[in-house]
Image (tube, rainbow, N blue to C red; front, side, top):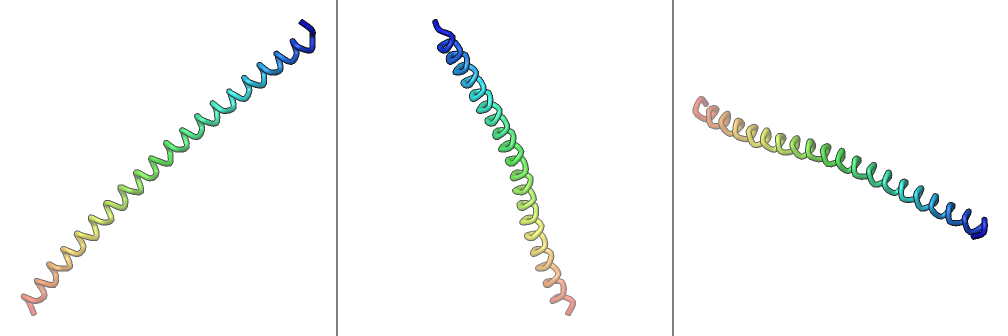
Length: 73
């Protein structure tokens, strides 16, 4: 084989290895970022649920206060 063909094959293998490595690294980073985002969303959703429960509890307490005010007044 001529030197040009050998150099071309080596260049091709190097290019493929570099491209594959870059794709794998980017894929791992994207997976990590998605995982972190999912954790943040879960924390946010838990906070929203807690706020709804607090609002329901607040409404119940306001109703009880209204009933007691009517009994007193």
